[in-house]
Image 1 (cartoon, rainbow, N blue to C red):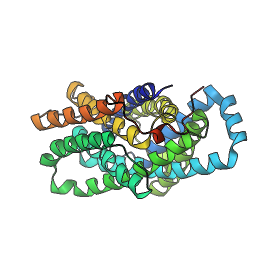
Image 2: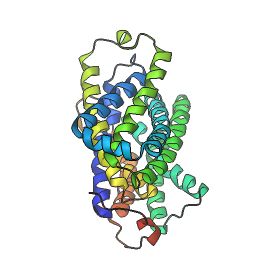
Image 3: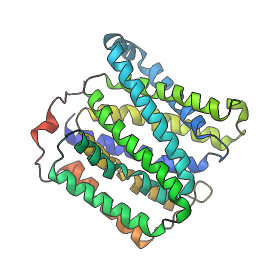
Image 4: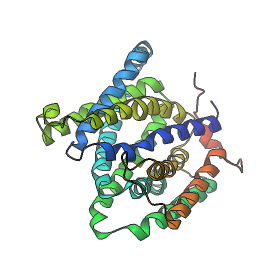
Length: 309
């Protein structure tokens, strides 16, 4: 798998993830955020384990301590930022929520500079385009009562940026299917503790809703099992900054769903000229990163990137 193929895989992952904002709106408001994180992560991990149990078992036996300790760290980060995202999304509509969560693309370069990682000039241009798109689309619509939700999602974006840096490093050293499965399994277990703290009744405290079951099923299969496995595979051939910029396409897809899907499925999004221009800027920045038109990636971005079997 070369870099372009990896970026296209990340684009497919982003398409799946873009349904998060839509699915969150289909989940009843009284369902705890920890419950959604717990159930979808555990079910997604179980699906991967059933399909690839032998390969996962062999990978775990070969790299037990490093694999498990790394996955535990990532699981804590993942469980926390997913929960913050779920809570913060309640303050925003689909469009604003998608733009807010993509602020990771701005935070991640700061994280990389903090740990003395080099970022190519072309990547900085892509980051700037995405950032301008977010400011243009989100700024005029932001209200005072949304600031607490914005703060929660800001912390979530910081944790997500740190998690991406760690995941990229681990994906180059461990089997991607084992890594994806353990990551989701541990994230589900940590979310279970939060769910117990929030509502000890667990499943008995949930509403009997077909919408909830359908949303959890779709989330577990497409967003957790398929998207996470494909995401870790692609991480072998990309950098953290590269991956985050491609992830920003999530908001373009999410707004498209909000504008095109019927009101019975999701809160409809009114695509204003500023949102449209913001989407164009984000799309331009992402496409420039995906296809790398100038072909001037530094040598360090290819170091240690093994071919996927």
